[in-house]
Image (cartoon, rainbow, N blue to C red; front, side):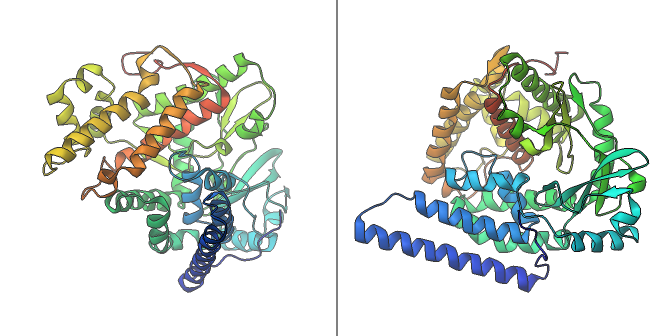
Length: 436
């Protein structure tokens, strides 16, 4: 993949790139509607493909927060047409890497020397390039290391980038403005944390230690003495990314074991630590030859307030969900309903969220769940499609749901689809409150 020799870092240069991309997208729409008038062809596949390629090319050049949002959207199979999802999934680890001179410049700014002076060996070419930074392989004192380096200007551009991206997101995603504003605010907060590599280093060490007892999981050792505010050094993890591993043939027992490992990892964090690794894309998990799973990135961590956690998971109790008064109280507390909702809107939202919880919570209502069931995911697709078209959702004067649920819901969506791709059958009651 061709290396990138510079990143637009100033507000004007980044805004100019946004505008150029908008012009390309506009041109794609003109071509589409001209073709529709001349031929009567209303298929939007080519339109979505052209837009996805143009937008991803721009985001890959800009990197940072806007590319991270694309990465997150690729996990949500209800958010965008499939052409966008396929292209945006490349944001996990297939974006153009920075050239070596830019890497050297970052090292000199952070550690006062070049990588070749600091490490015994250092790969000039990145082995993995994503949205916030890229990874190089190195050795030092007999250790094989992964060195993550943050792209220039990423931290400084988060807020301004999201402001520029808001109109595009509003047009493409057709979300209710109140929901979108709440979403963007939560994303901005998390992205600012992700660009703080010192915070990530502390969280990585802490969560690795607290989850070290879980079966079949391994974590790298981190080296604060070889890290800085824009560089993180950790042990190199042998194996291949989960997505690459899935392309290989594996027996069902191994797939189930890896699926159980991922399920237990998330359930333990949520129900016992009240925080979670909120970025469950396949690039963050490496499968070793012995079937162990290595977790390599703790940049995005969501902490769950106690009151939100208890109210949220009460929804999985049928006695709470099926009792009208208790359900209404929980829905008001979690922001699914509002006191000033008109009666017909209140009836719609109460019915809609009850049906959604019953569908998305189905794995929790039985001891084992088979995530290979394509019919289940077709139900989720259909539900998401219907909700996206519902005028009550798009025209609501309120956002729906607590901001704390945004990353929790997205994490469960990401986890579900990882398990679906694995075709795994897992024991879902493990690590729930009251269970071991």
